[in-house]
Amino acid sequence: MRVYLIGYMGCGKSRMGRHLSEHMGLQFIDMDDYIEERNCKTVPQLFADYGEDGFRQRERKALEELAEFTDVIIATGGGAPCFFDNIDLMNKTGKTVFLNIDPAILADRLMNSKTERPLIKGKSREELVAFIDETLKKRKQFYSQAQFEITEPDFSLDRIQEMIS
Image (tube, rainbow, N blue to C red):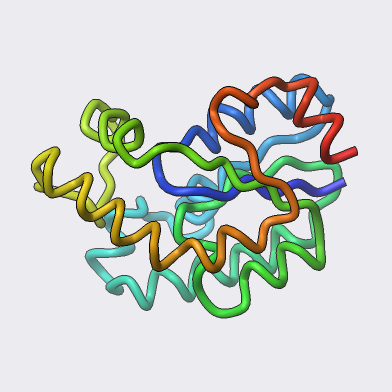
């Protein structure tokens, strides 16, 4: 079994992935952590050194590698499904679950996050909500290709396991 959790940054992919992997007895991999380990640089450093295009190329390579893993829950980066044919690769090699969270909730979570996120650095809350709304409109066509979609009230581990089994 291979499960890809997709959705906007701050939606809870990593948190949910850790809990779900424990619940199901599967390995958990955070794709951003995997990319950092493989490249010996943080995601912000990769963005700074190579730009978004260079980062996305490294992200694609990591996805191709992770698509070979078995018995794993993978928390993808927020943009991962939206570049190249990544969503198609995920759908062909595993189950995809879109964690769909309201933009205002995402903005609050991101404003309080300790994680450095290059795409939103320096934005006020109002700018962040507008940025999230605009980005979600662009990404919706990719996120909507997920095989399963859940919203925050549906974040029951048993319910998710039942859906993907």
